[in-house]
Length: 486
Image (cartoon, rainbow, N blue to C red; front, side, top):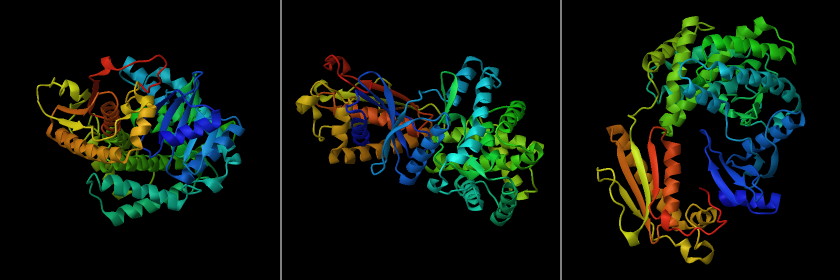
C-alpha cells in the first residue's frame, strides 16, 4: 500500500515524502494517506481496488474543476496500480463541524450550522446542472444512470442487507409490488441531470469556511431530488423537519438561478426520493454493520428509524402497505434506542509493545487476561543499519515488515484471534482485554504490530475503547530529523 503511493509521489514530485499518515475511510474499500513534503506541504494519496470507480473519480474531478467547482485537484494517477495523488482539503467535514457544535451546545440542531448548510445547497445545483454538461457518463460506475435497474439494486440492498440480516419479517411478493410502484413514481421525474449519489455531510469538506466536495465517483444521470434528499435526511445529522423545510426552499431558490423549476412537480416526486435514499442508506448500515461487523454503522439506524417515524406521521407518497408495515416494525424496534450498537459498550482493549529483555508487561487492570504475541520469529529490521535508529512507527520500517511473508501470516493469525475474543467479550459484557506484542528490543516489530492492531480495532469497533502503550519508548534512540508517522 505505502510502496505504490510512494512511487507515485516520487515520480510526481521528484522526492520522497518525509511522513506518511494513514487516514480513516468511511465504509469503503478505498484507503487514504496524507503525505508530507520536505517543505511541509501535504497531498492525499488514494488507493482504490476498483479500476472503473477510480477512473470515474478522476474524470469527474477534472471535468468539475474545468468549470470552477470546488473539488480536489488530481495531481497524478497510476491506473495500473490503482493509486492517485490529490489536493489535501484538510480534516474538517461538514459532519465533524456539526458534531463539534453539538458538543459545545447539546440539544437541537445548532443554528450556527445553517449558513454552512445553505452554502452547500447553493453549490449542489451547479454540480447537477453545470456538471451534467461537462462530465463523461461513459466512465460512470457501476451504471450510467439512476434508472429502473439501478433503483431496484438499491431496494434489494435494503431488503437483503438490512431486513434479512436484522431479521425484520416481511412478505416478499407484497414488498416487491410496493417497490415497483415506488420505482414508477421515481422515474416520473426529470432524470437528465448529474446525480452525485452520496451527497451527505461526511463528503463535504469545510476549508476556510467554504464547502469542498469529495466522493462523487458513484455519480450518474438522475433526478435533482435525490441529492438534496441525501443531505437533508443524512441520518446522524438529525436535521429537524422545520429546518429541512427551510433548507429545501433555499435549495430550490438556488436551483432556479441555473435551471427552470416547476416547484409543484418537484415536490410531488421528492418524497419518493427521500424514501429510496433512506432505504439505500439502511442497506449500507446493514451490510457494513451486520455483515462486516463494523458496529459504528449500526449507530445510524436509530436516527434513520426516527426519520421513518416522521415520514409515517406525514404519510407515504403512495399506497405502499407492505413497506409501511416494515417501516412500523423498524420504528418499533429502533426509534427509541440511543444508538444502534448490538452489544454492550464498555470494553476497553489495552495494547502494549515491550522488550523480552525486560520481561513481560505487568497487569495494570487486575483482570489478568489477554494475549501476548511473540514477534521474534519475524526478521528484525533493527539488524539493518538504515533502521537501527528508527522504530515501528516509521514508514520505512513498516514497509520492510509488510513485505515479509512471515509478517502477513503472523498478522492474519493475530487479527483472527483478537477479533474473535473482542466479539465474545463485547457480547458477554466484559470490560477489559489486554493484547501485548513482544520482540527483542521493543522498538521495531512489536511497535509496528501494536499500532496496526490499534488501527484495525479502531476501524472495526466504534464502541471499543483503545489504549496503546509502547513500554520501551523512553529507551528508543531519537536522532534529529528522523521521520516517523506518530
